[in-house]
Amino acid sequence: MSKGIVNNTVTAETEVSMKLDIREKKVLYAYGCPDYHNTVTRLKCLVSLTVDREARRWLLGLARKMETEVSEEWYPCFYCHLRMEMESYFLAEQFMEAVEKSTDCGEDGYGEAV
Image (cartoon, rainbow, N blue to C red):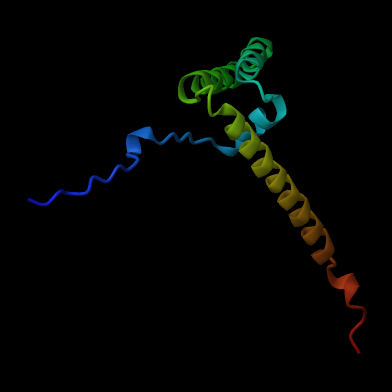
């Protein structure tokens, strides 16, 4: 009789993923902090201070998403990754603005044709 080898693998059910658009990332970059409970509390305070109904509904959806989809155990890693990603994003935006300004010379940059 031969014994089979048991392979223990991680299933897709144990993976955690959360999709955020750029607006949600910008809000979390501005108002988030390393502590999970404080971040959720800040988002709820932001909802209560928002006057625009559509923005309030959107921010409340983000706060609920943070409460339901984010685990307190992996939030510190999520926050660190978000900060690094957004810093790269803002650096890329600055770089693109600098490139656009430097290439916008128009006709004056070439002088008169002979």
